[in-house]
Image (cartoon, rainbow, N blue to C red; front, side, top):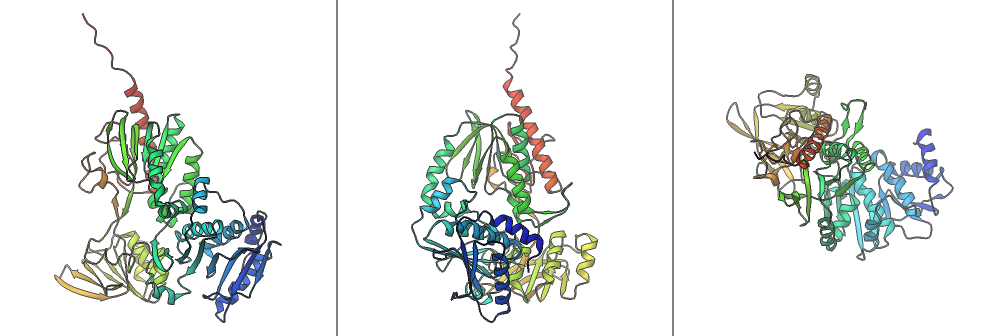
Length: 524
C-alpha cells in the first residue's frame, strides 16, 4: 500500500516519537477493513515504538484510534487517512506521543485550559484540501486535553452518517451531536470560538500597539508581497488578515505560477506565510477590518473585535470571495446542497444529479470533474454560448452524462426545508420557466471584491472594486490597494503578487515624500 519512498519518509518522521504509540483497530467484513489493517501494519513496521491491536470495539467500523500506550484513546480515524489526510495521521502519532506541536504557547495554554467535555467529529472527503487543517487542529486539541475527543469520518465510507447529519459540504464539524461549523478552520480559530472571553483581551493588546509605517490589510498573494517589500525597506510593517492566504486557500491546482511547475493553494499559502515570517513583520491573523478613517497618526483601521490600529500608510489587499447567485433559496440551502467548491464537496454527491452554474473556465472545469463522480451534470450559462477555453469545451462535450443549457437564467434554488431537491431556471430565448430535479448546485460565476467595509471611504467602481492609479494609490492619501479587490484586470495570483509589490513601493515613496517638510516661502 505504501511505496518505498513513503516508508523511508515515515522512518525519518517517526524518529521524533517520544513515548510508545498503540494503533487500535475496530474492523468488520467491509473490504476497507482489510485495507485499513494493511495500512496500520505497514506504518507500524517503520518504528519499534508503534504497535497495532485489532481488539477495538468502536461504534464505527472500520476505524482505528491513535493513543500513547497506557492513555485513553481520544483520536479516531473512521476511514483510511490517505491522500491529503496522511499528514493528519502522521501528526496524530507524533503529537499523541508527546512531540511538541509548532503552535504558539498562548494557543496551547488556551487548549489545555478548556474544561468542558467535548466530542468532535469532522466529516471529510479525501479529495478536500481544506479538511486536513480542521482534522489536524482538532487532533492536536485532543492530544493535549483529556476533556477533548476527536473523530475524523470519511463521508464516502459512512453514507448513513452523512444522511443522518444532512452533511452536504466538507469539512463539517459536529460537536456533541450538533453542527459546530463548516469550512476550513485553523486551531487558532477554533480555540478563539471556544474561548470567546479572550476576545476583549486580544483587542486590548492590539490597540496598545505603536503606530505602523505601513499596515497591510489582507493576507493573500498581494498582501504577502506587499509585506515582504515593505519589511525589506526597514520600515515598521504590520499585516492583518481574516485568514492568511484568503481565496488562495480554496484553490486546488495551480499550474501557471511562473517558475513553479505545479502546486496547490494551501501549499503556496504556507510558503508565503513562511516567507513573510522570515522578515520583521507583525502578523495579526484572524482579524477582520470594519472601518478605515484618518487619525492623528495619519490613518487608523477599526477591527470587528473593537481594536484600533494606527499607521502612517495602508495597503488594502482584501481580495475577493465567491459571487452568489442572489436567488431565493440560495442562502437557505447554503451547505445543504448549494456548494461552491466542487473539489471539496463533489465526493458527497456520488451517484446524484447536480447542476453547475457558470460557463467560464471554472464552471466547465467543475462540470468535467463532477461528471466523473455524479450521475448527471447540468451546466447552466446565462450567455448564449460558453466562455471557457476551447480545449475545456471539447472535453465537456465528449462526456455522456453532461447537459449544457445556454441562455438560461437561474431563478430559484428549490428544497424540502432541509436540503436541495431542484432548481428553477428561465429560458431567455423562449421566455419560459423550467424546473430541474437534482440534489446539488455548484455555483461558479466569478468573484466579488471584499470592499463592503470601504464604501464612502475610498472611491469604488460600479462593481465594488477599489479605483487605483498606476502606483496603486486610492482616492484617500496614504492608502494604497492591490490584488483582486482593485480595478486591475485579470485576477491571477502572479498579477496580485506584482500589484502587492508595486503598492508597497508606492507606499514607501509616499512615506518619504510626506516626511519631507514643505519649503518655507522666502520673504522679500
